Length: 364
Image 1 (cartoon, one colour):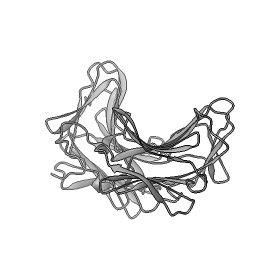
Image 2 (cartoon, one colour; image 1 turned 45 degrees about the vertical axis):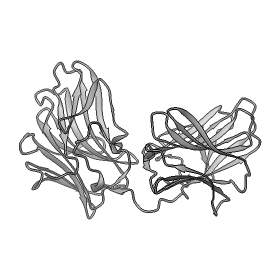
Image 3 (tube, helix red, strand yellow; image 1 turned 60 degrees about the horizontal axis):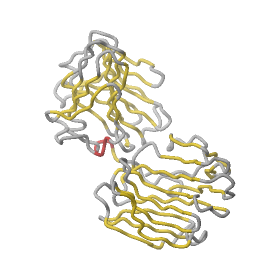
Image 4 (cartoon, helix red, strand yellow; image 1 turned 45 degrees about the horizontal axis):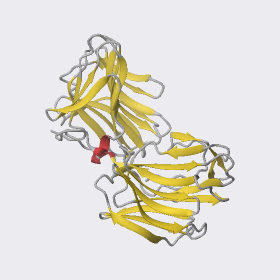
């Protein structure tokens, strides 16, 4: 669950933010900034879940001012509570435009807490005083694209507007429970395109395609770029593992391209497995090399990073069943909320080759 009490100014859950500061346990939007916002770095599955925010709004909004709490599914599709002047609006934005479900006069006490919830196919827009109870003000059948969503809180103000906005908390401030267990992140790439569990993926100077029930990552020759598939949501690696099959590797003779599997925490600490220039390395934060062996496409066809009793293990397998230990390390913190990434980087290689990835957390 996404949650923040804004006791820290690090904004770890909100890598994209501007025009904000933390004061006395609140995220305060800069009253001098025409636009200020914070957006979550990860997607969160809204299905059978909810997002709650407590925006404290002081002062009158002008006719072109607004305060918004939105959940973004990408491709210009999102749902939001938006305060426009003195009206609170429940809104759904689809590719065809916006649909306002309800407009009510804003009451700073009765509408001090905003909630967007999804429950068994119904999307609910609720509001209430701090501490509840919530009243459902609007509902609609959940659009098919409601699933993994990013949270976005934003404020727009015209020059001369005098209102102030601060967030007391998001989702109560303290995470309840852990993210998805990492073993539930599974893909055999049998569909025609990447699934929603990889919404944070991107490519530069190359292509990521699903072909013949596998993921094919192909960098463009003589270009510098990065291609990666990243899990949409945070994962809990504790007492779990992430593994993948690598049936085909990029050119291993040159030092101008490499493939890696990375587990990284919210504060950007990481452990990973890397094939580069014919060597398989396992490293940690700061590119500290923990160990290295000559890379074998047969013996190292499957890669795995797992955690058990406070220790991280790097392992490989020829068949995806029996894994052999490469090395281990203790003392890695923050593994209850991690990102998962498979990436390929290239440095202007004239013939980088390609990588094929398959069976993420799916044993043969």
